[in-house]
Length: 300
Image (cartoon, rainbow, N blue to C red; front, side, top):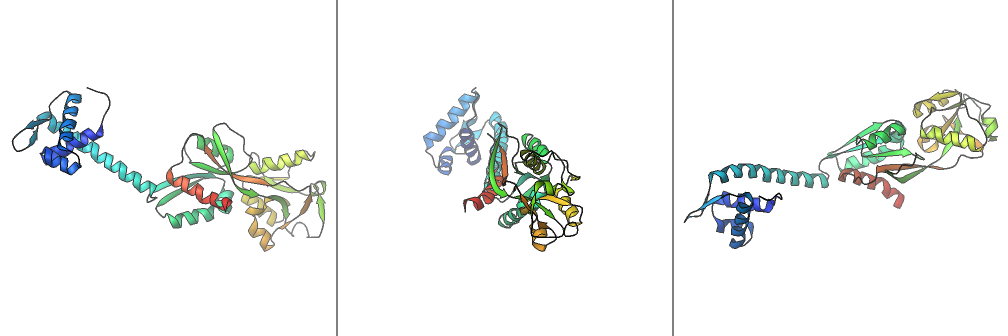
């Protein structure tokens, strides 16, 4: 008995067993009668036993053949179910996307894409895991999320691919409750005479700020450190001090005048937002279509 399983042989066997006639089976399968006969002979040889008894009216199953038929029915049914499932998934009629991102990136960057994707494919479930990047990378490696959308730079890793999906601009902003607005250029040292509100380590935003300070010869020790980026803006709006924010994530506060941007030199360099995936690991169809939706904005 061979080790390889040829489902086509079992499909021929099932059809012959169902119609009870080799000629009718050939017609149903759209192959020749000799091809059906050969397939049955090959299967019987592989299995080492007889499956059919030939009669003048056609064929009937042996007792062993009847037992095999019950198993083959299940196999072919599961194969059809798998095919139907696959077709359903690639047509985006069902499925799930698991995205890892900070709460800030989810709210200010991903939400428009989530809304658009849901409108296009309402039966796809979208699951968001909000964590610090360091924890999300662990989730990605363990298979708990399909991909990440995170602030860059993140530590380079040989097992990850990173695709830039947006440009970000960090700045210092403050409420009039803390500092009256005036047409002035601030040096970094003048900014540091005030209370600074920023995210706690080890967030990527904080790491970028630390590098900015270090590159300007400053040992940085903020006055108020907060885990949540959202609370950084809330503290600034309440007048606790000057906040280090990302303009793209604080549009509402800046446009409404709740916060205003300070003109600081040297300016903070532009940074990026990236999609992080595991190398040699293909995204499911729904997740790949979601990534395409994000990246089309870059191409356009």
